Image (tube, rainbow, N blue to C red; front, side, top):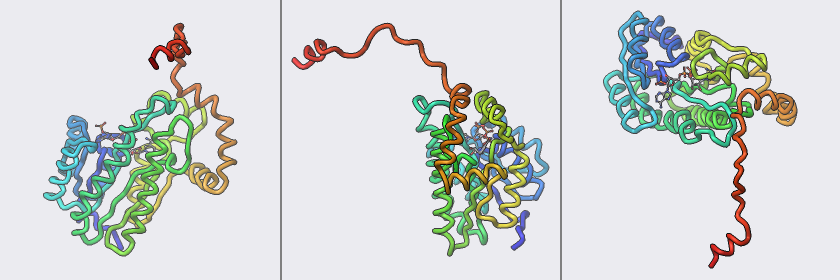
Amino acid sequence: MTMQWQNQVVLITGASGGIGNAMAKALDEKGAHLILAGRNDIKLKQLQRELVHDHTLVTADITTLEGRNKIVEVCKRWPVSILINNAGTTHVGQFDNAPVESVISTNVISPMLLTQDLLPLLAMRPHPHVVNVGSAFGSIGFAAHSTYCASKFAIKGWTEAMLREYHDSNIHFHYLAPRATDTAINDERAIALNTALGNQVDSPEVVAKALITLLEKDKSRLSLGFAERFFAKLNALFPALVDNALAKKLSTIKRLTFDEPKPCQSEDKTPNAEALSNKLV
Ligand SMILES: NC(=O)c1ccc[n+]([C@@H]2O[C@H](COP(=O)([O-])OP(=O)(O)OC[C@H]3O[C@@H](n4cnc5c(N)ncnc54)[C@H](OP(=O)(O)O)[C@@H]3O)[C@@H](O)[C@H]2O)c1
């Protein structure tokens, strides 16, 4: 079925970011009405100025109930037909000090809760779609990205379960997995690592084009990058091969992404037997 873009109301979370911004421009060109959600009002207004048509802006933090409710209220006024769960955050470095709660909350729990809230509204539209933005790291566990990988593996699994659960309904679920993309989510460490490992980096416009293809061709899954798709398959079939290949890169990954070791404490904090016995009395 041909996508009737002029009839679509598309909610993009993380519209103020690099990929969201490019998606907004591509969908604006197609003639859809957009609900652009993000935390940064100034960036959203700037984006609106760069678009041809007038859209609806909503400033909201998706990790809060208040933020999600605000988005839902807007979607009642503008009956949403396509939800793009794109907002995300990352952490690059050793697991010891990873912000686990914030990454899992932003990348997994919040899109799941927002989708739960919006399903009744989506179901009222004839051919609604939910697109979940994953990552190449949703198929390959990668050192120094453990929490991010956990979040993207979760989104991938959840999307697969949902597209199967809703197979007999009018709601279509899709999984879009970009590879490394040139946006602000990649800090200096991530950029240095991509350069050192020779990883291809896409522009956000490439991801936006893939989104349009995914929706127009009604594809359930779309992953960007031949090498990334190949390694994802290899990892699924022969994980030990990928373990060995990545073990050879570990020293580079650690050198470029791990924090400097903290200076040793001069004071020995190991409790001695005398101190312990004092505590017991
Ligand atoms: N760039 C890559 O290399 C790459 C590769 C694979 C997958 N992805 C995925 O692509 C998606 C978009 O990332 P990006 O590259 O465009 O990164 P980005 O430029 O950093 O944009 C992230 C967006 O998410 C929003 N966001 C973060 N936390 C939020 C929260 N609590 N509530 C509401 N919005 C929040 C940000 O809003 P603020 O402006 O308020 O911060 C921003 O609009 C993410 O899911 C990411 O995991 C990116």
